[in-house]
Image 1: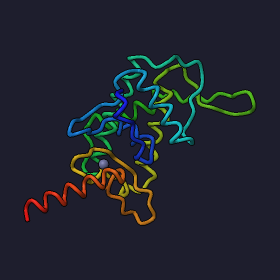
Image 2: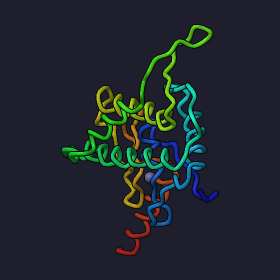
Image 3: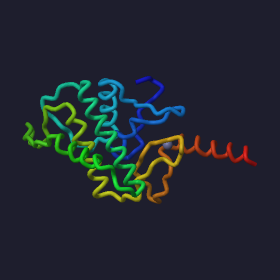
Image 4: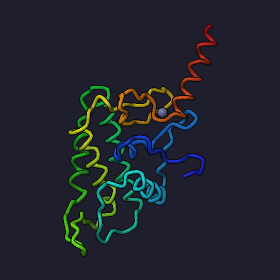
Length: 193
Ligand SMILES: [Zn+2]
């Protein structure tokens, strides 16, 4: 991934931050997950932003092209699923099954670890991300306040977020996006006036 296109962690939920790896940069839709290395880099940052997510341990191989393709396919279905929910529309026929598949293929086998901890275990590289991402999506869809799920208000932005503010009045993914959007509106208003 090019250095000037950083990953965004503005979703306030792991599933939304995964969806937000596709974003608009200077009017172009950009997929920031281009290589298995991008995925590994995103995942280590995702961990820092979501320290409470489920850890999948076990003899897991490094991410490869297959892992990347699997994660991206689930991500794209999650995007469409959440957008449908935000818009109050019935999801496409294959979007919810994709989440169900991700929940299942996360292989949430519980194992006893030294030191008395019980952890999720898998040998499937994709499971490391799929399981916590799918559980995050499940929690949002079944336990969260769906009226707080939003797409950024800027029409130059496609990022999704869960509004955790007390007032519940967050409209943009970030203050930078808000500032750009407001100045664009001022500019077009001044042109019309
Ligand atoms: Zn935005």
